[in-house]
Length: 180
Ligand SMILES: Nc1ncnc2c1ncn2[C@@H]1O[C@H](COP(=O)(O)OP(=O)(O)O)[C@@H](O)[C@H]1O
Ligand SMILES: O=C(O)C1=C[C@@H](OP(=O)(O)O)[C@@H](O)[C@H](O)C1
Ligand SMILES: [Mg+2]
Image (cartoon, rainbow, N blue to C red; front, side, top):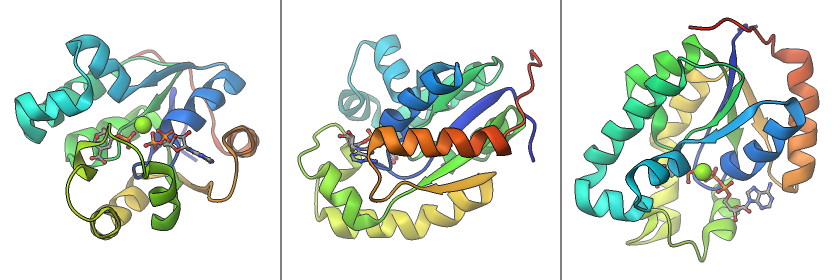
């Protein structure tokens, strides 16, 4: 049990952090914040353009600053981007003030969901399956290490996944109202 004032979703691209997160936030009465969408609002640029102009390092710096700011708040469901857990500072902040859920998904399911996607620069070039498999090897252990709970939404629709995860969290997440 990790009593925490926020709920955080981590996991690979296409796991459903954004779409399940939005429904789950409504179900649990939390403010929904998607890190990528927030960065797009702040910069006025879509994620691929941020990568193009500032490189992945520039995007990661913005992501880290945003996570630091968000995790000072409470009562939020924060849907992170798939690479947010790479930085140690982010992991520490997410855990300090968040109950962290790892949304799991198989590579085959990711490919189905992201087949026509153009919004993820890390999948823009080369073989998608090979890229997703290597990211899974690299990041899988990090998601596991940072998470308080793992949830496999493979084969579940977005509303059903949100409903089941919500019910599980009512038992597992002790929500604390502490301000920073
Ligand atoms: N459980 C699910 N069942 C069916 N489609 C899903 C599911 N979760 C996500 N999707 C679809 O997959 C795509 C990527 O989902 P998204 O929520 O953006 O994932 P993430 O934020 O983890 O990258 C979207 O088109 C979304 O509608
Ligand atoms: O895995 C990653 O490194 C990324 C995942 C994306 O978010 P989603 O996981 O919501 O697709 C987005 O932050 C960016 O394209 C980088
Ligand atoms: Mg997302």
